[in-house]
Amino acid sequence: MISTLIALPYELARLPLTAIDRGLTSRLPESSLPRTAVDRAIGSADKLAGTILRNDEIVDRGTDRIERSDKLAKAAHLEKRAESRRQAARDAAETGLREAAEKREAAAERAASGVAEAKQTEVQGKQRAAESAQKTAAAKKAAADKKAASRTETVEERKKRVAAEAEAKKAAARREAKAELADARESKEAAAEARKDAEILSDLTEAKKQERKQD
Image 1 (cartoon, rainbow, N blue to C red):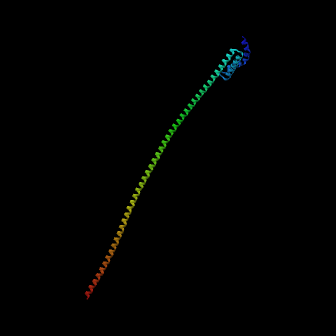
Image 2 (image 1 turned 30 degrees about the vertical axis):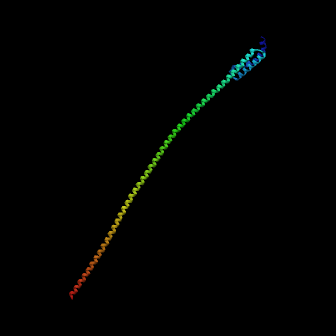
């Protein structure tokens, strides 16, 4: 009874703190920093007052409050650490998913790029093959045209040579005919002169015969 009466002034002085604690209880979780701070303050005050007043009940009440506050603070700290780890795990998972998505996208882009490069290489190969075929065909056509032109030139040259030979033969024949004609003309003239000489000789012979007859 005496212990209770001695503790009564302290209990009255403690009422504002307990009122604050009850007000926070309805608004904040018991592991929140304001509640644990008030709870620890009340427990420390109870423990100190109980020790001074030699009231073990108040000391035990204060000790229980402090221990409960410490446990709640530790639980809140552990929960905060756990939440931090969970958040880190979520972040890591999101990062992993994002990196995996980026890798898949990059792989898809590389695959698409590889397909595009393969198609481009195929198109370029076809173009080079077509160009090579065109060049080969053009070279063959040029060689054929050159050969045909050479053959045409050879035929023309042969024609010219045959024509030249024929013309030479004709010229030689004309020259030979002219020479024979000249020889014939000379032979005719010589024959005419020989006949004329023969007539003159005959006339002379006849004249001499007449002269001898007259003698």
